[in-house]
Image 1 (cartoon, rainbow, N blue to C red):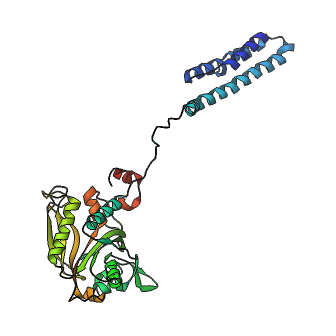
Image 2 (cartoon, protein in one colour; image 1 turned 90 degrees about the vertical axis):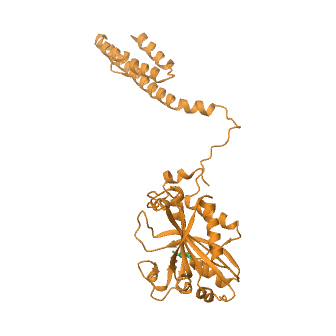
Image 3 (tube, protein in one colour; image 1 turned 180 degrees about the horizontal axis):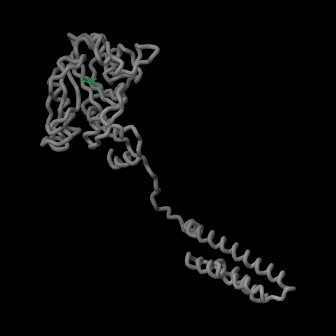
Amino acid sequence: MADKIQELSEEIKQFTAANQEELEAYRIKFISRKSVLGDLFSEMKNVAPENRKAYGQAVNEVKQLAEEKFRALIEELENGSESSASKAPIDLSLPPVVNLGTVHPLTIIHNRIVEIFQKIGFNVADGPEIEDDFHNFTALNFPENHPAREMQDTFFIESNPDIALRTHTSSIQIRVMENQKPPFRTLAPGRVFRNEAISARAHCFFHQVEGFFVDKNVGLVDLKQTLYYFAKELFGQDTQVRFRPSYFPFTEPSAEMDISCNICKGKGCNVCKYTGWVEILGSGMIDPNVLENCGIDSEEYTGFAFGMGIERIAMLKFQVNDLRLYSENDVRFLNQFKNIS
Ligand code: DAH
């Protein structure tokens, strides 16, 4: 019996398991209920009573040995693949795996718009998101009781009704015109805020790009040609535009510009509501009052201005129909813009 026990403990010590099958073979032989060790325990009754204690002890020791070895074998197998991988020689010629982020879709559109206008001599200006009533409304010729000044649209600062989050980037137009001398050819992108319930079609903050051109003898024809150039650059050379008369306090005359639907090419689809046209911006000749409010002689200088929503253009370009996706930072959404820049 002692020989048998000795033999088994040797076998246990020598055992190696190169894979799961061999591990399982070990388990069946030394650990399971029907293992050879189980046989040793059932031999107990045949051992002379005076030797039973020693025999029992010896069998328990092999059992412990078998269990320890089993744990060791499992561990070796689990780490095995890792350690063999770490032993593999490093291939220094492989390019590094770098998981780059993506350019945000709104940034893609923003950069594209800036690039298009920079080509025709526009520079880029910035302005504060927290504005006063003068720059956001008064200087832009908003009448005292204009509905846009009311609480439902504008986030006012509670302690000071003169201070608000800017509701449009037109405020930057005022800041540039009051501080610099004409001519201006300026683009002013930025985030704007409106007190609206968040839904697929509206948000309490979004992005706009304002543009304005002020010089001697600037006319409606310059406005039309500039925006026509822009639409074709952004949406493709076959894009058609149309201007519809509109109203803004800071421009006279005012117009909204539509482009032929870039999805159905003007044939009619649910994006253009089967009209073949989609609106992309507001524009107009800068009202002389606005120029004068900024200390610019409106007899000498004229200009045009335009404003567009970056989200709106991104939605048309990327055919995304829920505005909220742009500010949720869901990587499943953002990753879809990986190869666009
Ligand atoms: N500020 C306008 C808005 O937020 C957009 C706009 C329209 C800007 C016409 C302009 C313009 O400069 O000429 O809806």
